[in-house]
Image (cartoon, rainbow, N blue to C red; front, side, top):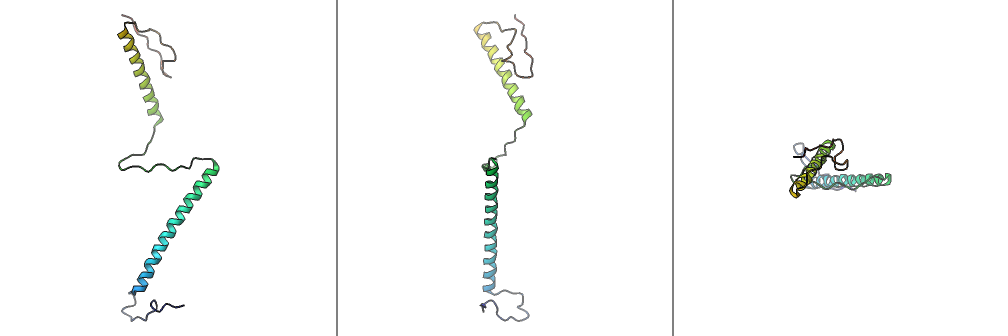
Length: 126
């Protein structure tokens, strides 16, 4: 089958111009290629998730970031430093409460209340 609209005889000056039917055909072709690319990418992602699920890994995609949000990056050293700071603050709160109640602060601390990697601090009684 030959589409007569597509094969219109053209002069030499009009050799590089497209007829409306050719333009429509080009646009349809580009749309189909774009759709085919999207569908192929979706299929590849789905097959990749299935393969990872069969391997036993977590395949849930990360939540998309909201406008202005940064991705969460956790530095293990910063987490350790923050946990040590919270332990020191808890220890200080405990000493303040003991001082308010009129008790003398204990000069020796148990190993449980001391954070890992720190030595217990002895306080002098007034």
